[in-house]
Image (cartoon, rainbow, N blue to C red):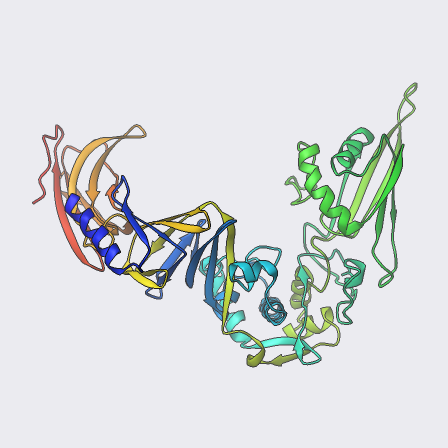
Length: 518
């Protein structure tokens, strides 16, 4: 193994830019200090794994004083295919409406220029529900993903425009029967096409929701949220007509009162609820599971109720919260779109209902060709696994072409410390290894000198079994379960990567005396 390690270190030093530092780690990997690492799948079915999800674009990792940033550069359709917002079993028209709304929102986001964080880290849009929920290749590979892909590709470059520019097409899960005018949720925003409309027939578990708390528990919740000064005396909700401003909640306590909009109150109580009353909040739905949040939307009211009790107690004070919908409720209701599609509405009809006065146009000049998506920022360390061959560049210099293996990256004073896979750039070599126990089971433990696609087949007591693999395996020992009750086992293992291949045969009896790598 020492000669293989030496070759790895020499290879890396030869192709790294001047000033880069390389050193051999204890496990034989090559460690490099750098500023930027890019990992690009070299084939259509190759992917980069990060946080358990597959990504098919170029994944860029950069070092900053605040930690590591992980950004994927992906084509437009690839980005939209990774949007994970609605069930793919829904009606085609609902999926098409979602695809157009998502494409429009992306185009609007990019037309504004990057945010401060986007400029610092080099991305256009984030991958969370703060922007649009993006999950790489996972949605397209899920059941029904082909239906979502068809909705994406079938709507081409269609977007909604207002006065010739991409519209701000907000959408959320469920309205509970009626959406909200945008200025009634965010008073600083005034857009004529984001007004309240009816949204009947939503078959969503979040169309209506409610929960109750005894007075002492509501007091604890509001204290945790920083809204009471002394003992709680009352909570009052003030509602308005559409377009007349936000609903508000006033919390009265012994030493004063605090008033917040229902949208602001939603944020405060969603943070405070699990901390103050984790056994009770989020509350349980009538069908058993918990609601996803303490307060689901800005459409809710709080009532103070006195429940009669036998003497001498007299009554018990509780607070009841009743609400509708999940999300901000501005723009398109996704469950409302599905309800309309189920009644025969087209995607264009759905969009014109929820976004008033906009034009649906085919505008390739207004949509991006590629999108820079922030998968993570501020990380201390990350691991990147790959399936299929990838090309890796460090500070602009290619250090791996069509290679396999897990790359480890950590932050250090604004730069990256990059740990490459053991055996990078080398063909795999197999060693029969040993027999041992793992989690109480007898296993065979062959050794692999470089990451490779590995497959193996077993002959047990003279009978051929089906082959397993190929699976990507990092360098080192890996485990193959030893069949219980078998008198003799013949194992054939194959390993291959872009630089070569190897095969080994292992024969093991009831009382194994060793191995034979014929």
